[in-house]
Length: 140
Image 1: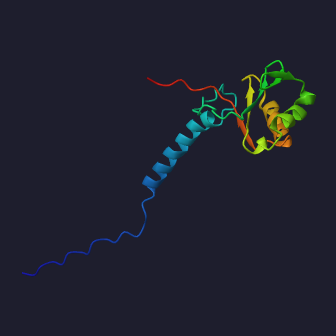
Image 2 (image 1 turned 180 degrees about the horizontal axis):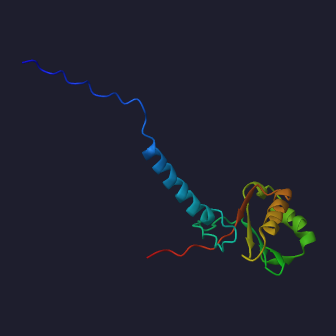
């Protein structure tokens, strides 16, 4: 008896794109659902609190800006026009290289006003600048 020869297996010459299309559509749906959440501009945000070390240096200089615009250098109130001159006097005598000028501004003060104070301190000769933040409460 003669055996019948079996036909060779059929060679796959086309790529099955159905699974690729399924995955692509799922990714598009995920993108459409999450895009409005990511691009929301009108979100109420609260800036994070920072872990900072306490300032122990005796040569620190603090510039405090209240929400009403009052300005003080260390504990003395100064006018905006006299701030740079008073800061130069406080940083005089070579202390500018080691002194940390710390800007303490109310959280309601716009960032632009804080940036102006930092720039004015830089013009007065301050080398080290910082912005004060509220200490984050330690977790038990």
